[in-house]
Image (cartoon, rainbow, N blue to C red; front, side, top):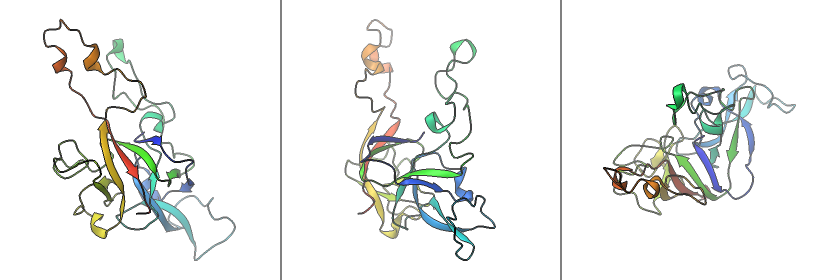
Length: 220
């Protein structure tokens, strides 16, 4: 899963039929918005609710910098974003991270995406946002500071770069807070439990940031 719920402000808005063209590429944490699709070309007619409007139906789709209200996608292809998670262990226990995915995308079968719209504190895994080293939501971006505005670029990815594709429309989704390794309430980092008599010492255990924490406020 690429979206982590920290202090999410309540329940999700709901589950909505996703535009077929966007569904497979959603990893979680992308910004979504409402749209329409032609029934004849977009599979799944369970969202009609008893009426037809020019043969179209309501869907959610990846935002492209415009189209409030903004929502966050809570589905994907990793972590609890799949039916059985991922393999840990593997051959003689060599595989500790990045194991083979067990099970399909969470939207397989229903074609629906769970969308969160409440202002609150969320985190998106590194890689599901704009990772451009010098301008994106990356630890190497020297201009990124706590409180920086996060815009929505084409493809629904969060970015602090207002010049990114789709992001310069003036619409933004929240503010950056921090990079974190994880958000467990009680955590002992590796650097504090490394052997003091090891040849390299604790400095060799570099911190790996896995998520970007942000304040989501799509009404701004």
